[in-house]
Length: 115
Length: 110
Image (cartoon, rainbow over all chains, first blue to last red; front, side, top):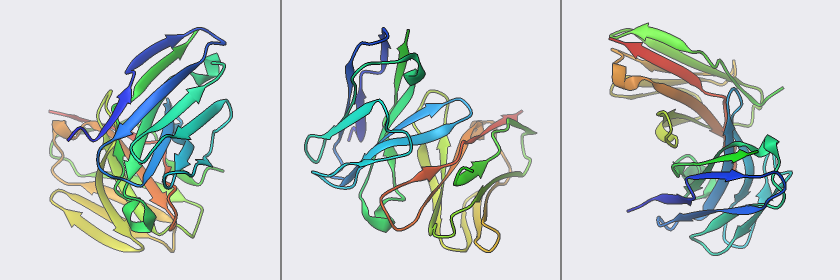
């Protein structure tokens, strides 16, 4: 099983460019998440999707959009990249629900640099 | 104030030491408490979790929750160089949201 797969692994963007980060899970999980990780800030929730067809804002949603394409896939889009969005982005999935949420599986991360 | 606070470290200990990692939180509604381990340039992985108050032991690792003090701990006995990683606490309150601490970087030297 691949678990949670993120693409790309690395990306350099120029300010103002757009891009989409892709995430897919093969564990039949209901809930999917996008986090960013910055030094000294820990993992901060950008958006999450509790189930197919629903999305909700997390702690730091500004500058991002998401799409829950189907149960397997959850994408994160940067419409106009800014240097402040330089970060490591992690996608995660869980079975969902108050008990299932404890078992989060993470992808390997996407290292994004905006110059 | 952040909902979950965690000392970022780094914490450097000799092999064989007992390590204590801690988090405090402000939201009394948190019910599930988790510890994740993250190796350099990897995604976090679940180490263990507890529900509500109490202790849980798994091999060399023990998780403790004190809801009255809003304080959780992870103890690592007989620490090994392979335990060198960043340890993140996480919490949830009967929803699908997971809230993470900033992580504590641990270095165990031989």
